[in-house]
Length: 154
Image (cartoon, one colour):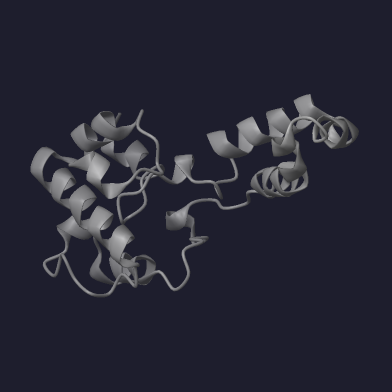
């Protein structure tokens, strides 16, 4: 995929916006909407099944979360709708005039406001992009889940 097209998919931090639970046109929203349609009015069945399959007692919470995923409305981090609270990358990449954090002369920095796990992943993603290039990084990661444990990247 061409660099300019990758910019519509990867956030400046390196995360894939299209795989985010909050992305309005992403796979998670699409699949959850499909599952919600397929389940239809399953509530009564879940209640009956819970008498002999206790896991179905969790159905109301599952249904609430599933409904939340179907309402994803984010257009992507580069479009100003980043859902990460107080993300420092969004303002910084524009100010610095870079497409990705690794392109900044201050990378890695303390401006992200990421929790320790996300910060570790951010550093790994950006170092990998710098090492092999954005296009190769995208190809290498395009089929991986977005939500993985940092150690799985090593």
